[in-house]
Every structure is written in structure tokens, then in C-alpha cells.
Amino acid sequence: MEYKALLEEAYGFSLHGCRTAGAGTVLETDQGLFYLYTAPAGSKYKSRFIERVKKQLAQQQEVNMLSLVKTKEGYPHVVSDDQIYYLYRGVREGVPDDPAFAAGQALAQFHQATRSFKSDKLFLPYSTLGRWPGMWRKKLREYNGYREDMDEADGEIFPFDEYLLTSYTYVHQLGETAVQYLYHAGYDSVVKETAHCGKVAYQNFDQGYILWNEEAVRYVCGEWNWVLDMRARDIGQWIKAEVRRNGWQEDVVTCFLDGYNSVCPLLESEYAVVYGLMLYPGRFLKLVETYRALPWEERQEVDGAAWKEHLEEELIHMEEALRRYPQTIAQRYGAPVPHIDWLWRPADDKTDGVRDEASGG
Image (spheres, rainbow, N blue to C red):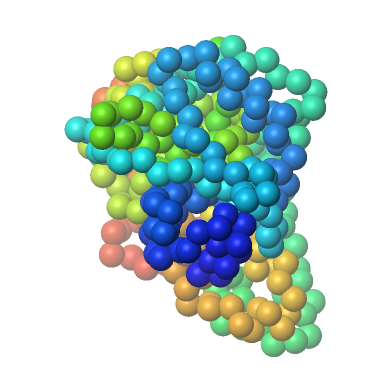
């Protein structure tokens, strides 16, 4: 636990144990329970943006914020190794009768609470609204740059590099397909048509950003991970995180969507944009970017097997979801979501087979 000493020094408690809870980590300390969250170090400049959003949320009765815990020196977070760490005081948690429905409903209410948020030019660095295609293509260029690095490398190529290079054609095609899918789904129109449905989203929404106490009072947290974007981002990321954790479970996904629709129904076109987000191998490309940034000698120390397992989650665990989501949405919500034919394959095929098929081999 590399951040143990850092947190103990900054907050003055003794850490006894921890466990992951979706987007956050539950810390057990000698001073009680805390929730730990992280965000990129650049988020430390978001203070004004966050305070403006929190002021907006305070006007809504349905959205409560957890109390942020300041460091011993009065800071709202700790910065270390290109990350900020921030804490909330824990609560006596309760579990809703239908967690997925409740999560969708709570997320919709959070979005609704931000729909009249007035932005500011100073907040443009925290906006990803309308920028998905460009952002995605930038990550794909990074992957292409990594492949070019390998082509020119004189040194040893490690087994993990071989895995990344073997995966290149499939992953790159998947990313390009996701970008094209966004355009065909009317992404730019959806951005405009849903502007009244919420202005603030999360960088990567997951369980742990919304909690309930024993009295069923709902709490929202994770403000250093807020960005300006449309609601489809959070909906798609929740589905991706759920699938990575538990595989495709149609009833869980539809309960989540039903909960969301009970507050503010999705437009037909939004379901296809969510599918485009599901297609995009963002977690895979982010890990490649992290790996590429390592000095050559540090790459030797990387646990390639563990990293490969993470990357396989992005590819394999999403495959059933990508096959079944369009049919589920069409049957339950009557929304057309074109599927991608080349993703379909027999369930017992290996991922390598998919890569070969995708590359024409």
C-alpha cells in the first residue's frame, strides 16, 4: 500500500486496512472510516469549477454531498506522483432494494441538478463536451506511435510488447470503428439535443461515486473527477465498469437504465452513442500510454502478466456486451442500435482469433 505513509502523515491517522469499492477505496483507520478517491494531478486547478458546481447542487434537495476531509494543514487534497488523493468521512452505509435501479435514478438526479449550470471560459480545460472523436483519435495516434517506437527499437522487446504489437490491428480497428460509429449515431446532434439534461459528468463514472446511508439518504462524491460533458458519458462508463466487474447481465443493465429513465428518459439516439462509448477500448489505450511513458529499464520491471490481464478485460469482457446490447435496447426501449458485424464470433474462440479475423489473417 504505497500511499499508506503519505495519508497517515497528511491526515494524522493510522491506517489499519482498505478495500476497493468501485471508483473509491474504503479506508479503515484508528479514527473511523474514510473514503479515498484519486484524480490526475492537473485536477488540483479545478477548485473554482468545483465550488461553482457544488453551489449549484446545494440548491437541489435530492443531491447531498459527502463532507470532504481536509489535511492537517487545511488542504483539500494531497498531491503525489501525478495524482491527487482526497478523502471523505465515511457513513453507515445502506444498500437500496434494487441497487442498479437506484444508481441509475441517482445519476439522473445528479445530471438534472446540473442542467442550469452556467459555464465560464476558465472552465474550458475541464470540458470534454463534443470532443470525443478528437480525443479518441489522439489516443489511437499514441498507440500508433508506440508501434513505430517498437519498429525502430534496437533493444530487447519484452513479452508484453509482443502482446501489444499482436493486439495492434484489432485494437486500432476497434477504436476507429468507435469513432465512425459516433458520427453515424449523430454524436454532434446528441450533444446539442441533450444540453438541457445536465452539464456535469465524471471522467469515468463507476460505483462508489454515489452512496446511501442506513436511512436511505443519498450522497454524491468525487468532485475532483467532474468534467463538463453530457450524460451519455456517465451512462456508458457505468455499463462498461459493471461489465468488466460482473460480465454482461442484461437485467442489471436494464434496471440501471430503467432507473435513469424514471427521472429523465434517454433519447433514442443516445442509446447508440452509449454503444459507441462501449466500443471504444479506452482502458486498453490508457494503459498503453502509461507503459509507453516508462523508461526502457522500468519496462523490464512491469508485471506483464498482470497488465495483460487488465487489457484482456477491456477486450474480452466487453465482447458479449457489444453483441447483446443492441438487441436488448431494441427489444426493451424500441431504439435502433446498429451492431458491428465483425465483432461477432463463436463464444469458444480465442481473442487471438478475433485479432486475426479483424486483420484479415
